[in-house]
Each structure stands twice: as C-alpha cells, then as structure tokens.
View (tube, rainbow, N blue to C red):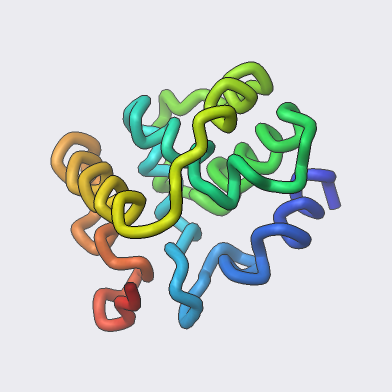
Length: 139
C-alpha cells in the first residue's frame, strides 16, 4: 500500500468508503465522480479548500497532494478529464491556506460548481446527488 492509499484509509475511508462509495453516509460519493471536479480551476480548487482536506492532519503539502491525486486518479476513474493535471505541493499549500467553512455556504458553492460541471464538462445530472443513485439523496 502506498502512503497515499494508507492516508486515504486512515483519514477518508471512514466516511467515503474504502472504494469511494459512501452511501449511506451523508457525504459525497467519490467513485467515478470526483474526477469531474478537475474540469475547471474553481472546482479543482474547491477540492483542496474543503474543510476536511484543508485541515487534514497531514501537514506535508506533497503528501496531501499525493493523497488527493490518489482520490482523483484512482477513485475518480472515467470521470477524470483527459487533460487533468495532478495536484502539486505548492498548489496544495496555497489553497489550504484559504479553507472553506462548513455549512450552508459550502453546500451552495458545491451546488453551483456541480451545475457548472454538468453544463460545461459533461458531468452527469446525478452529480447533484451526494450518491450515484438519485433515490439515495441525503443532505
């Protein structure tokens, strides 16, 4: 197991699931979906600025970049755009210095970003749901 995989299991899998399938936890599904967030810079930045990412106990920015690259390029599967570039330590350090706050504004930002990803990037409509199946929506 790589350090990135181990970090994912330790810090993320409890809620997002070992394979990125989170249902029934009330957190977004990652498997075959998170890659769409690499379609534009605002959505890409959002991933690092999320409170649980920006405040992760992983202090080394390259280690956090490696973790997020594992999430995107392994769990994201076919949802990753062909031109997606991996996160770099400098980018992670810059973005995590401006974390988003949890709560309604964060959810509103996610809804706007996802609507943009659906329109501009070909993301599926069900990306608005936290889970891959629309009938399992939990907010």
